[in-house]
Image (cartoon, rainbow, N blue to C red; front, side, top):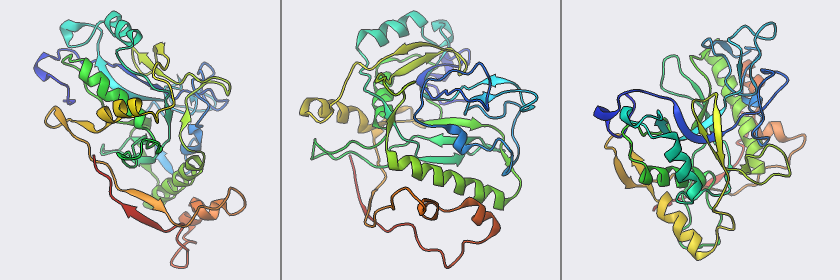
Length: 330
């Protein structure tokens, strides 16, 4: 059973949630897909030609424009439903353990939940623990905040935990939880052609992630002139219905705003004990050797997945960078 807040009172499992939409129309996907962000083209981390994967479930690719259907693909035709859940609501029926849609909209519009200008950065592509696994794009905080220097840059993806913790402290409906905070599923029941193909696929993804890392966190806007990256209310992953723009705007380096932010992101929800605990942050890695500029050496820095599959890269390959590590704690 999902780690809902009150299992005995969660009567009906539902799919309504608050989160981010990463949907993006593509000529390779479903013609009815819509664009909610242009920051990341998730086609870069999927395998439409099945060069690495042997099979997926009947939904095929959930992102990158979705599945177009015949004759381009023979999975179930579906629009792009790329998303990141921040809080699962379940249903809009309080008697089933959910929250009424009206209450959610009223709270989100009231200003009780501070919504920052959301800028995110994909941090990893992983196979989860299912068998066969889902492939997921992760949006983790790679390190903790600086608790001394309020002018320091906040860690990537801090906004997700900031909103998540506010929502969890405000809503106490029985069906409340957050599945695998924080990720976007790109396909389910992924089976690779071989272990070599699996390694090559993730090498390809690592190269893309490094390219995105050069640009840094980006807002989820539908066109370059917009600056309203906020969160959505979904009835299910295919139906975003209400958009809530930012109401807690930058800059975030004033003492007042930094105290508000730190007060929320220094805690995390423990799904095992269903209680709050002190946040634990990964150690921050500080690069000593700078990455090369984008150019003819970029693939050498990122690593070439085709070479990896063919076994070209080996003991003579040079390390991409050297790092030194510093600890961070709340």
